[in-house]
Image (cartoon, rainbow, N blue to C red; front, side, top):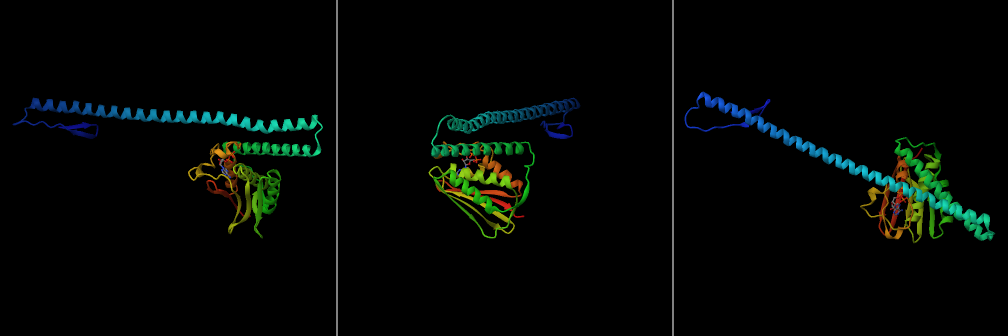
Length: 296
Ligand code: ADP
């Protein structure tokens, strides 16, 4: 007797008996087959339902975990942001009060003003990164005002600024001769280079050479390179460093401040220009970041 459930067959009921089955026994066997089929079908449905329920429960648990992680990351992010904003503000307040309220000798006043400028610039960079991030988060295109730009001026200016502010490091700028201009937003390019340069300084705490170079990568593409001799980045961490909020702990740079946003912003800005950013790094030897930009 077939054990049928709807159009499909679940199996058969076989009865072995010497001799014929009487019509009563046949009817009984058919009824038994019907009930058996129903029972097997119900059991299978119940099992399926349980599996679905389990899968659903797993998915809900996973989503809840993820939401909790995001919530925690957001709270941590907010506290880091407030701390990051407060630190330069405190320095700005402290130095400006000192300069206003005390008779400070000119050479010391100059040094204090240098600190004020450095902290104001840091504050500016944090705010610019946060603004870029809020645009990226909102899914809005980063606003770019592209124009023909000569990378030589950008490289020279930034090398000079950083060399002035970080005397422990040796800065070198190199621009290939007859480099074609790029089609880029002046401020965005400046933010990208400043982010990469401040990382090169932060993550090479013992000083060392920081090299900025601009050259032709291949016809139609210009590369902007920032190279340092710092702590470097482990190979397994490299794919994550461009993700937002990601910071890779290192004992030598534990004091380095940051929000884990700089490289995310650099990558988003490079991509908004139709370019990209790449990195090579060796732990203990240094890192080399390359921003690739289309020429005009
Ligand atoms: P932040 O510097 O604010 O932490 P970034 O997004 O700029 O954030 O960088 C993410 C992480 O990548 C840093 O925390 C650091 O661990 C690593 N990193 C970035 N640049 C360098 C570099 N030049 N050398 C070594 N590590 C770096």
